[in-house]
Length: 249
Image (cartoon, rainbow, N blue to C red; front, side, top):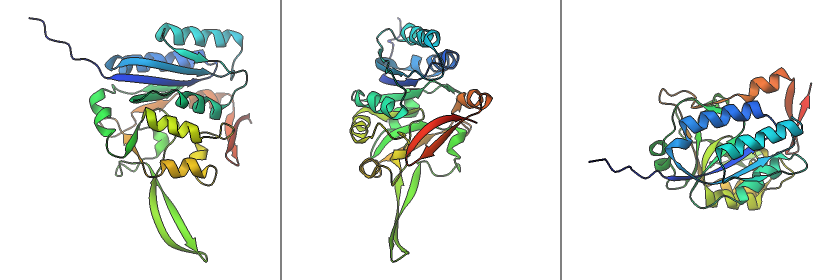
């Protein structure tokens, strides 16, 4: 008698990408093999910014997305804006679990539902696969930062608040939609999650948890493959007043 196949949990996807088909191909191939196949992929929203390539690269990225996800809704803005891209995608996040993904990451090992979904409970609103960029101490399971209250120059009260971001993560869809409604599209989407750039967004996110998920050996679970691409072109992100731009040195 054939065993009954267990139904895979549903997972929606938001994808931020530029015109970098070589990186996008590696990202989609890696996550298809190590993540997507373990879930039932439902809604897919992609934002393809006119960044780092021309019409040919744009068309190549469109083909990669549509070949992988025929159901994808793809936004193609006329001007690039990281802040607007994240806000646009998160505003369409459905209820349930959403994987927010960028076009320059690979998964180092399988990420299955039983490793992620049980962690999205209580006040935890996101589970972020560990990368070297997190500089994790191997101890605290949540990303947090300290908020200080000062009086006459003295710190009279301090508390820890949830630290969120826009690198790949599994996030609660309703939480993402609320964040989108509070985002300023003209600001860097990650920098405005910190004070003083967007207090309403920061204060909404602060009480909730962003849980780190390391690999089974405690190391990075995902790897940023865009770093080498940026370094080879002498590109660096410059942030001022909560706004960011890529410059070539």
